[in-house]
Image (cartoon, rainbow, N blue to C red; front, side, top):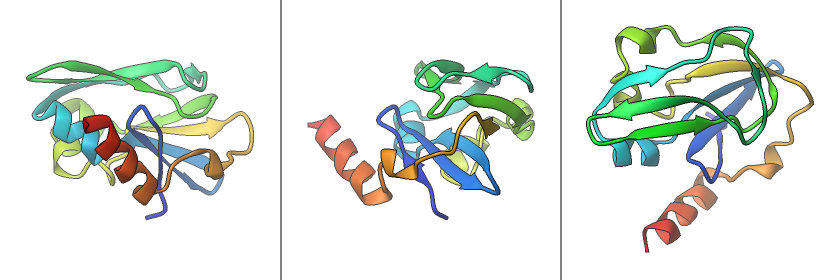
Length: 124
């Protein structure tokens, strides 16, 4: 899967012009047992860098930030009843699907290797 990462621990994958957004494995590990995911409504306008929802675990609540501006065209409804899907496979479980306002330059985001290095440095 060709996904890229943000410094806020989200991932983004672009398919057929749509952006799928989720949280990284690093983020779900830090949160541990996820018990609730706050999802935006379909049609919500997102602004790059701004919060669009949150993930709640037994330890903490963490905001989720939009890596791109656009309109939410689909939410992963499975997460409403089974938020633990993010613990099981965070980097294959998308949270929202967005129709971006502009073409997405994936070079602005980190590769898996760059992201892993970033996480290592963040833990020091």
